[in-house]
Amino acid sequence: MEEPDRLAERFDEQRGGLHAIAYRMLGSSVEAEDAVQEAWLRLARACPGDIENLLGWLRTVVTRICLDMLRSRAARREDLPGELPDGYATGSGHGAGGVGVPDGLPGSGGPGGGAPEEQAVLADAVSRALLVVLDTLEPAERVAFVLHDMFGVPFGQIAPIVERTPAATKKLASRARQKVRGTPAVPAERLAQQRRVVSAFLAAARDGDLAGVLNVLAPDVVRRSDPAALRPGGAAVVRGARNVAEGTVRNMARARLAELALIDGEVGAIVVTRGRPWIALTFTVEDGAITSYDVIADPVRLRNLSLAVVDV
Image 1 (cartoon, rainbow, N blue to C red):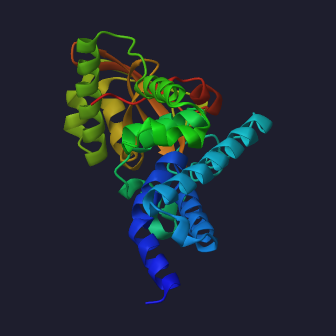
Image 2: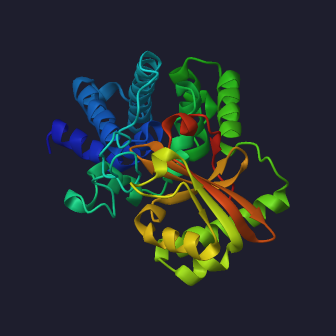
């Protein structure tokens, strides 16, 4: 076998692992594939004989490419403070002023039953909620956290990539870890109760199980939706377990995309599209039942929420 063919073969052996790293760095399957492909182009231009550790070399190259992409992304956001994510525009699968399921996502009835990127997200082991939280990190923090906490790369190997000392890199990862985990606003026992109740609510909602939804709602439960979350003719406030449960079951498609998240220090749920929060649900749980919850879809309100992962 000729050397170029052997090099391509060795690269393909590492492609899956490189894509996994890039995906967690970027939160986008398409961008992750671009980063991996760029790494291959750089390898093809390099002198293979000078590379002692191919996996280490490729991992470093992919990470540096991702770091550049993250920094560029951060700069664009600073330039476009009013930018809204795809799917928020009027008429994008939810009618004027209302939130249904965006075209192209599972349950939307759009072509192909889901965009390739969204299908990749659904298939990947990492949760969409975690990807949203990772997106709140500074680029160097994200690199340090992903490489060390998710892939076990030593800080000494990460440090040159982020241009820090190993000690400073360790601090980056620690700071990122704290942001990812968040700070609960209630005692651990109450947080655990919230998680049990909200998890049961989401499971029943995903299955269209009316009795299951009713089982976790207080009789006088109240659901409040901001204007951006309303379909045409929808009520901003719905009262009573039966009315709330029936509305919840009608939104099965949305519920199937919902994941637990820590929202402002308490257990809630978020629906993510294209790597950004699309809907957030915040709950009040008392005596093992949901007494009220809010449906938030307004982009400004979403941006002001403090999001973290629910520690499992």
